[in-house]
Image 1: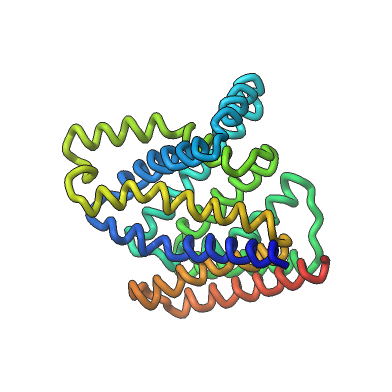
Image 2: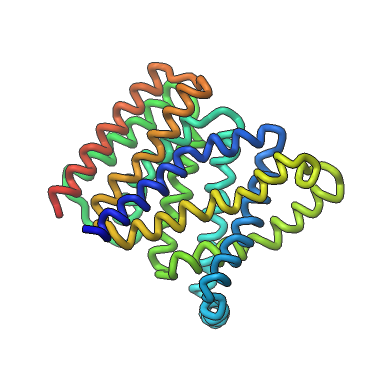
Length: 292
């Protein structure tokens, strides 16, 4: 029971922090999304490396790097995972900065359903009839939004697609969560560092100019890594069914922030879309619970 409570607290903590993350990026309103992304990569790598050093796990990381160097297929998978999570971060930060928090909520609501659909396509997993209905409902919700807006909701689809593909790639890797995020940020770290130095020396960046922006940019590494650390602890102590239900806390908080705090539009189109997606989530959760 103690392990369950600890795992539940850690999981809820991780999804709570992810749900409130738009509040953090909104504080960096004077910087561009690209500069925020750059420092998120740089300081995430620094924070995770320092954490591994504190836990005396750097030798294990060095051994893993040696294995990846000799296994080209696995090395390519790590690079693919790094590019996918970077794209996901980029879309999310851009959306928050440009007042599309509600769209990010849509994306993370449909992400689990898209992950299941990819499981069918890539790993030949089987679904129940009710799970197929839930996926169809979510697709109908996105289709309805696209018809009403006259275009595909790219933020929502982009977030769901990149994160579900990221999960699919990581499923085949089976690398320790601590090492995984360190390796993924390491892959894109040189490019982020070069761009960060370019911004600094050309005077186009904000790092080092104002104390608030500098502190927030450095803190981007902590707010990225801390939820991942908590999520890893939660995943180890909870049944998958409970963990899957907890994940809907994050997009719910983001939705409330977008509508109530930042007054983003929540028209009849968004309401109808969310109604279909929420119904899909309920059916999907019920189908999973009944199967177990």
